Image (cartoon, rainbow, N blue to C red; front, side, top):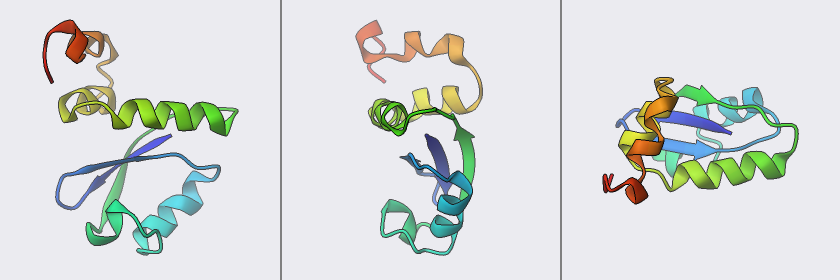
Length: 92
């Protein structure tokens, strides 16, 4: 599972078997996705999983997060994540 920061500051969350290859595809604009009109992109976060199903599940989880919560993950402030949940009453 990986997170890219696009040139407009937006974040893209994806998953892949081969991160280096996928980054090359994103950078070349070869991936018809959210990123193709927001080049260049920068890898800002990645997690590795043994099973693609687990990476995909994590991708879907992080896609549902607010920008503030994604930025805490990227910055390594994992202790803040539970408090940034909308269920924690933050609404972010």
